[in-house]
Amino acid sequence: MLTKANVPIISISFASILAICKLVVAIYSGSLAVFSSALDSLLDILSSMVNYFALKTAETPPDENHPFGHGKFEALAAFVQSIIIFLTGAYLLWRSFQNFVNKVEISDVNASIFIMVFSVIMTMILSIILRYYAKKFNSNVILTDSMHYEIDLVTNLGVLFSLLFAKYFEFHSIDYIVSSIISIYIMVSSSRLALSVSRELLDAEISSEELERIKDILKGYGELLIDYHKIRTRRAGKTIFLDMHITICREMNLSDAHKIADSIENDLTSKIENIDVIIHIDPCDQRKCPGILDCDRLESNSKN
Image 1 (cartoon, rainbow, N blue to C red):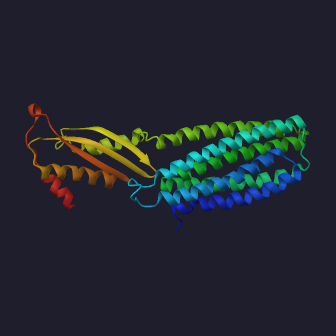
Image 2 (tube, one colour):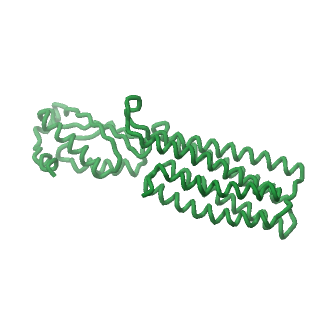
Image 3 (cartoon, helix red, strand yellow):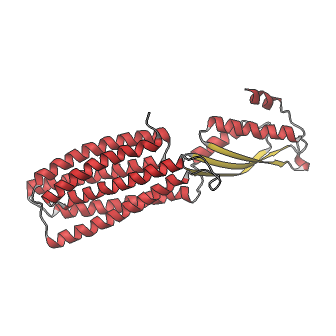
């Protein structure tokens, strides 16, 4: 069975085949658009290798130097990827301008068209596979890799369009125009990707949907909790970290108070996958204390 850490091997294999084929055809035909796509495939290999080592590291258990685990290595790898993608787009934009100035023409359009049709099919298959595993493993790195290849699919279609246009209308300048558009698209997409991933690196709160799910679970303890507050959440890889305060009756003994906290923690961890919970107990205000509450239900819950 394929593990999460081994998913990038699929990407590396696909990208390696495409990079070699595109480079051979780009050198033979002189197409800048095909060369830009080949360069992008080479960077795909590098990005997928970074993902492979990041996922391997992220799955390493917490240690003395990383007591909260290594989950953020995933976000870091995705952020590095976004920078690589942006630099690739900037380089391709510069090459497009250079070829436009020098009026470089494509020598063999047919070979270029063939390799780009092959590339579109391969990239589409890879994107579907990566989307499936990104959802299955709830991984930002695999999702980022999937988005990367979806961008590649769009760029490959653009290259194919430019080659067909050059063949049937003898307008070779379309090669520079399309490669420039692709370059700008890559730079914009990578910037959005970097902004999205940086939320995790900067300990942004989890999504509102996930937070509402946590609050719905807490509402089930209405007869035992006076309130809950100071909820703080963040994500590191697949793990959600939650710390919060609960207010209970000040007259309740320590054992019963602990049962309430344990029951809430067990409920959250059983209903929400990969959540790490820390609960702080506060006594209620003496003037508003409702009196000692019954904890028999918690004892039955803990036995179940």
